[in-house]
Structure formats: structure tokens, C-alpha cells
Length: 135
Image (cartoon, rainbow, N blue to C red; front, side, top):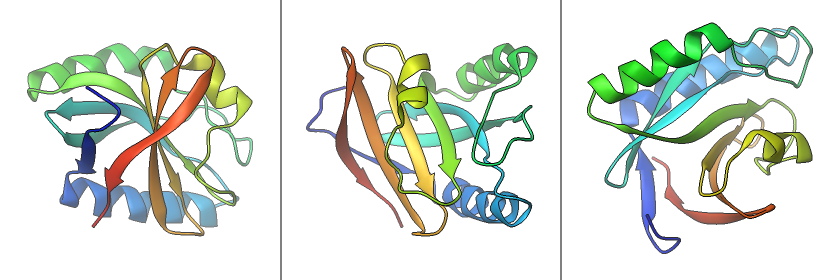
């Protein structure tokens, strides 16, 4: 993958993610989270249970992550990064978000209030926004 590539999200998956993120936000500003799989420039979000009840935070269920990685592979995708929603802030990675990303990982963030997705790629200690189109 190069920074010049433009990615898009599976449209049915995008609709589901939007609905779930909005419902979670309405339920005390909760975030949803998961892993991102890629098949060429097509991305899909594979949700993982958020184990924290703290508003505006996410912590993935560690026991689910391995099973979800297997599901990603089984569906012909490659695990390329992580997804989470921002219930009340822009889709820009925070310091906390950067802490769990490895170099070259993608971070797909959904801004619930602004109703938009943004895609970032970690390079060393920073993230750079990369091409992403949403339906």
C-alpha cells in the first residue's frame, strides 16, 4: 500500500457502522471499535466488543481480537489496521490512538456528529491522512 492509493469501505459495511456508531453515541457517548481488513483498495470493518463503559473511549476485547483476525483472513482480507468511532469529536487520531498503532497501520475513524470517515496511516510517531472515499 502506498500513501497515494485511495481506499473505500464496503458500502453495506459502511451503512452498518454508521448505524451502530450513532446508536452507541446516543447511549452515553460510547464508541464502537474493531479491526480493518483490506482486499486491494476495499476496506471492511470487523467489529470487536468495546469493553470499557467510559464515554468517548474504547478498549477492544483482547479475547475477541484473535477470532476476528481469523475471520478477516477467512473472508480473504488482510488485517491492516484499526477502526473506532469518535462520538463528539473530529475523526483525527488522538495521542491515545497513536499509542496502539504500529508503523504502517491504518486507522479508520468515524466522526459520528460530522457523519464522516477519515483514514490515517501511521509513519514513525505521526499519522498522515490518506485517500479515502465514502459513499
